[in-house]
Image (cartoon, rainbow, N blue to C red; front, side):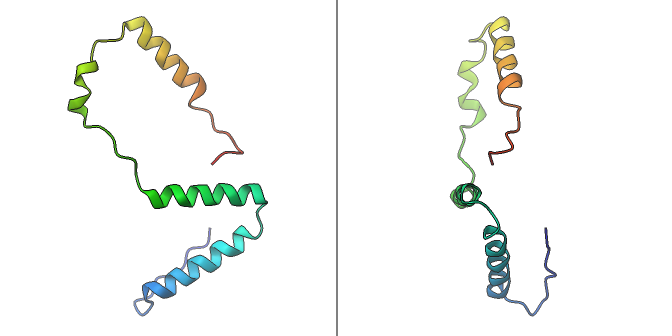
Length: 89
C-alpha cells in the first residue's frame, strides 16, 4: 500500500484528491464482484461503529446458560466464526 508523505502545506482537499485517485486506480483493476465488495466495505465504514448495549444491562442474563450449553456455544463459535473466507471482506 502506498503511503503519502504528509506535508504541512497540503490541505485536506489535496490529500482527499490523492486518496480518491489512488482508490480509483486500484478499483479499475478489480473484477466487478470485488468492486461491489469494496463499495460494501466503504458503506460500512461510513456508517461508523455499531452501538452496543452497556454491560450492566446484560447482567440479568448471567447464569441463564448451563456449563454444557456454554461449552457447546463456544465450540460453535470456534468452528464456524473463526474462519477467514478469501472471497469475503
